[in-house]
Every structure is written in structure tokens, then in C-alpha cells.
Image (cartoon, rainbow, N blue to C red; front, top):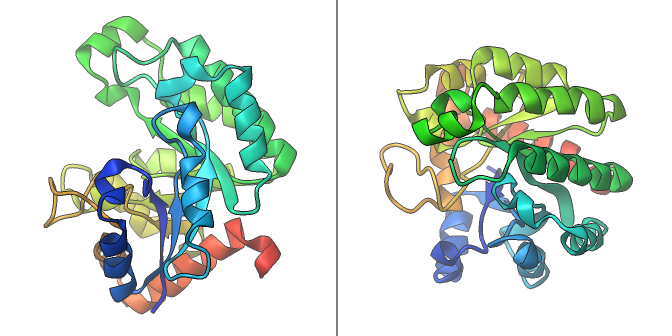
Length: 282
């Protein structure tokens, strides 16, 4: 059985301090590919995921990378940062641009206009290289009270979908709603716009029935599984450090929601990853 962790922050200290063990445990449960997310600690270090992938060629799990400027770092998306992203985007080990998006969740996040400008600039880069995008989105309904006071009636979900509809979907490149955390309606809208839905450990949390509903009804050829490690460990490991080996726990849960064997879910999500990100290798 072959599993893909489609979103892991392998270059974060919580995992790099034990990277050999992290990769060995992933290999032991069938995780044979990991997409290492290249946001770093900000734009100046978004190259770390690509470097990690380059240093682990020929090993199992196979490691690929993304590169992008997270919305919380949008104020750093100056020309120098965007030039670095352009360089990384052209690297064959960099399969996607992300994670990028909009986030009005924290009071400290950059102004809406700054986030939107950074997002659109990165869409331009992704279009130029025709690589999928990895979307980060936190629904504004869950924002802190201070953030709600600051950002007012603005809705990150509506703003993001509007930008995608106008500036991305017409180009037919696709992408992933990473760590899908929206409602069933959000899932349908994302699917209609050509996106895949990627499910992380929070699908196992009973607090979010909408995520489970989406994991059950989304077409089998449009879903992925991920860890978002070191965050969002699935039940019964919630609160612990997450890592790619736990992709299997989430995959087992999603397979159960859909009433199919784990092997079928694993085969489908692996094929979906390859079709979206590794077209030239198929």
C-alpha cells in the first residue's frame, strides 16, 4: 500500500530535530511520498523545503517541495521575496506554489489589502509556471474576537473564492484546498472551481461535522490526505506532535467515512496526487 502525505512542514524545527526517525516511521506505515511545504519562517527561508527535497533524492519516502508566502507573512512579499519565489517555482522539485491564501483569523495578521496583493502576485507566478496552488484558508467565523473587531464584516472565504473565480479558475491549472476546514457548501464551491480537497487530522475531530460530510461526498478522484505536521494530530493523538506517519490514521478515518477499504482510499489519493502534481512523470 502506497500513501502520500500531501502537506507536511518537514523543515520546521519540531520535525527536523528528528527527521531520520520521522521518515523511518512514515516508511514503516506505507507513506512513500511527502510534499514538504516551503513557507519557512517567512519568505527568506521558503527555500528550505526545496533544499530538503534535494538532499533526500533517491530515498523513501520520496520528498518533493512547494514554495510560497503564507498570508500571515504577506507584508514581507516585496519584490525580493517574489523574485525568490519565481526562482523556486521553476525548480522541478517544487511541484506547487503554496501555501498561499487569505487569513483574517488573528488580530496581528497583515491588512486585507496587503494579503490580497500578495495572493494575486503569487497567482501570477503560479500561472507563469503552470503549477497548482495550495490554498490556506481560515473561515472568518472562527476568528478571534479582536480580529473580528479589526477586520469587520470582511469574510476571508468569500474574498478568496472571488479571487480564485476571477484570477485562477479560468486557467485550468487546479490546486488544493489544504487541510479542508470549511462547510459542505464550501467544498462544493471548491470542487466546482477545479480544486482537490485535502483532509488532515481535524477530519477526525467530532467538532467539525462539515469536514466529515465533505470527506464523505467529494468525488474519490478529487481528494487527498495530509498531516499538516507538526500540527493537527488526528485522534487519538490530538495535542501531540503530528508527523507524516499519521497520514495513515487520517486515511483510515476517511476510508471509513466513505465505506471503502483503506487500500482503495490509498490507491485513489496516490493517483490523485500524481495526476495533479506529477503530470510530466506519468
